[in-house]
Amino acid sequence: MNKFMQLTAIAALILVATLSEAQTLRATDIDSATWMKIFSGQLRDLIVEFRQGDEIPTTLTAEGDFFETLRTQPTPLSIKKNFWMKVEQNNLLFSLDGTDFKPLPQVASGTLSIGTGAGDAGGRANQLNINLKAYRK
Image 1 (spheres, helix red, strand yellow):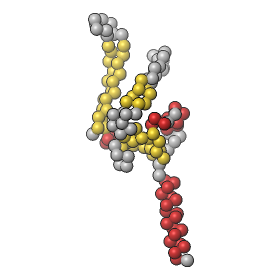
Image 2 (cartoon, rainbow, N blue to C red):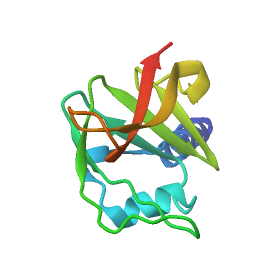
Image 3 (cartoon, one colour):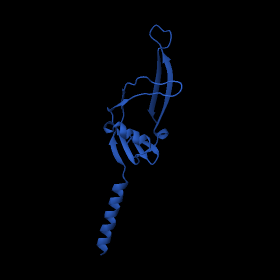
């Protein structure tokens, strides 16, 4: 009977460990409905893997009382280095090795800058430039 109890305890531990592990999905395999669930907090305990060489279609949209985007055009975001994003409860954590997850400010730093651009001849601004820079800490 003692052996049976030990085997039952081991099986229970394996089952709990399996159930508590976060599911890992490749960023390139996730559809827009799933991304919406991730960022709205509906999906928890999930790991999203971004691999070097992946291209993620990205769009910028704006709306509100002061401005809006009339057309959106996807621009590929090229992944230069492997990293992982973990959705845990209502937190986003990041990892560079897929195992050690930390809040983003402990993994990377960066800037967001917004400016305008004009043609080669100068003159009035003919576009808005948005630049996001992210660097490994």
